Image (cartoon, rainbow, N blue to C red; front, side, top):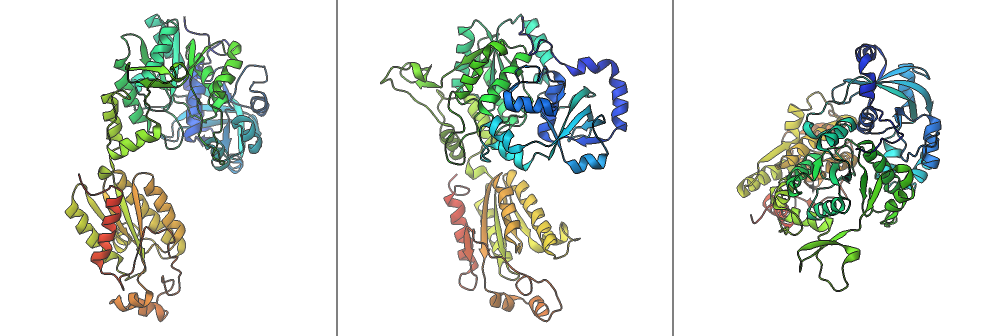
Length: 574
């Protein structure tokens, strides 16, 4: 028999509100509405399905204060993470809503009404207090604290919700199960003892060994329940991870394990988050829950130390185990013993025994460089999937961004570099010249600072998409402003390589090179706001290469760019 839900009753609001769904749908279309953020969408999905039982809505101020201060709801029920709906006060005023008003909550992806919220109260949180008490520090190196101060809106809206529609998913639909559906699966399979395993990372042999060991020690089955909502910034995307999980499931003994996805927005809240995860798994019917080393840990704080101790999460969950009514399965990190071809908890390995490990950093290095990943660490099927999602440098895209004054020669360098990269082969090469972009994408824009920044932003968007697709992109706008260039660098850098080349040909040489006489007209005052004459050019201080065509030929500049790309592995031996 599956474990009882937290609070005794599974709050599946879809089932509760099904008899009045048509009336709620009609009402939702007529009400004022807010469009949810990605985190709010995850929270609402688990509120509606019962994953957050006993909650039936977003926390009121009394509930929020009680959870933040005491890890409890006002009635004494254990609850460790505040679940709130944050909205800008100006938006609430524009909508004309107040306490007692009803508000439709819409899906940001398709504008579909998902729920109706009856507002109980509106309140302003003390974010510093929330950061200190919930996450242990008011330190914006913590991703949840950074989100709190930079993405959370100023007013929290509390109140109960009624279910109108479930969020629509188009990926992995067969393994996206609500708590009611998971419980029904357990009944069908006659599973009475279930160990739940939480993960936001790809699984390898050690994870399989850990979960099998936990199940056998407790005569139980295993529910692999990875998070596919929001995880830590920089994590591997959930599409890749789910393919990994699907590949590893056949490695379990027949009938031992099931895979089911969890649309959770993680906070990386360490100890408090571990308690929250245990409650959620209890609502899904699990009787046991694995809490590993540094569970839901966010990494280093701004002083370079870990936010939480390695077993702090285990300690807090164990402290509340009687109230949680789910057996905690604490696990030490496993290590590989090559002499016996097995994994063992690191604290059980006899002194002097030879061990092997591959850290996350080392794994990423091997994926990036194409270095071998041994089968004792991961399964070939998993490695293949990870390599497809993380190709080596010579199969990744990059952007070379040339910036400089008009007639500095950056377009000529760009064209010559395009020829050199086409000769190199291995990827498509796209050329984004400033005038071409002006004609094709930004013809309606003028030359104010704002309009120049918009134009450079469009170039950055196109460059990032080309880079993401594995192409070589060469962009050659004037791009006179440092802030706009840095935004492009950040945008492209998330998906591939970015190289900033400052074509620092002196103004007097640019004027001599200007056969069209544009500089002459600008100096005469016929053209206003011309870069280098009466509008500033902010020379880069972070360029990967500085080139002056008054001193160096184009061929030499192209050669130096090629050397940069060879150094970092984007081109060269294949």
